Image (tube, rainbow, N blue to C red; front, side, top):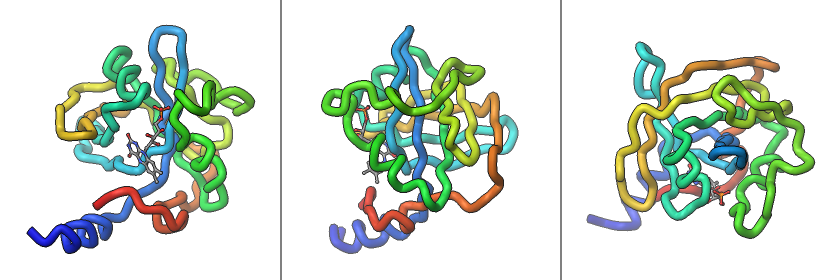
Length: 158
Ligand SMILES: Cc1cc2nc3c(=O)[nH]c(=O)nc-3n(C[C@H](O)[C@H](O)[C@H](O)COP(=O)(O)O)c2cc1C
């Protein structure tokens, strides 16, 4: 395979930029994620590519819930904040307005929309696991266009 072609072709897949909220026991965390898509209407399922060497992966594997916070076009700075590993940034949710959703995962007050998932399956995958979540709650604050990876000028994929 032509590795450069693989990289360019895979980067053609359009992605949103989300803040994924996680919990484990009493601890909360959130990270910037882009590998997320819907994979079923009934039941409503999404799949999230989740990096295995992160604290967030350990938390999702244990408590098996997550929230997906959708950002607006002008909220790249929020994504910048949550991209830092918790081991470096500490408590990323400190100073950020949020509430606990139905699943107990954090839901950001400034998200334009959100949904919450219960994990149905975790497929080993490779360096990221494929986490299949069933959407059990959702809300919309502002029905406007969402931030995409293309909007940010960042790359994650290839
Ligand atoms: C543009 C961009 C997109 C990202 N998308 C994902 C993703 O879809 N899944 C993932 O697990 N990590 C993704 N990451 C990496 C996480 O944001 C990063 O590993 C984060 O530090 C993990 O946070 P934690 O240490 O708090 O668990 C992405 C990073 C960037 C810069």
